[in-house]
Image (cartoon, rainbow, N blue to C red; front, top):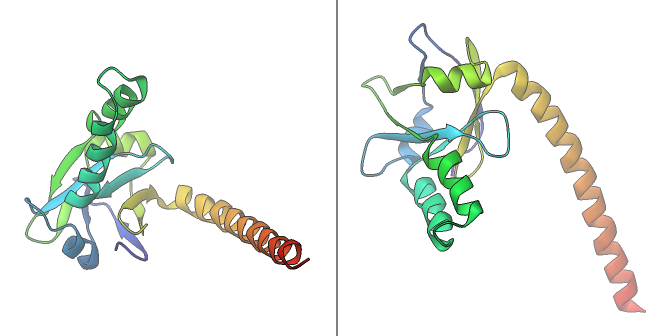
Length: 155
């Protein structure tokens, strides 16, 4: 699993050192990762072969010509970059992805289990604060539902 959060600096060639823990998890038929513009957030989404295979399974389950299939193919496959590690464990982010998400200097790499995201540091700081609030509210709601179910089930 991709875990934790790392702040890394992009060099002048848009190279970033991928955390060693992430490199080990991305092992597959080639020494690198698959990255594309995230569908759910304003960041780069990435992962190893298993992550790519998961998306392909979802896409392949949809009928050819299905609008959702076309949207996923365009967004994921059309935006995909296959990024190999160099000898220092770096990947070079495509200029188009850097421009799309304002990645110029410091970036934040966030592990999300089977995938990771690369954010501009400032954008992730705001996103993390919003996600913490959503998690707090969601957990409180879930606990209230569980209490109500226990009370209602015991009557």
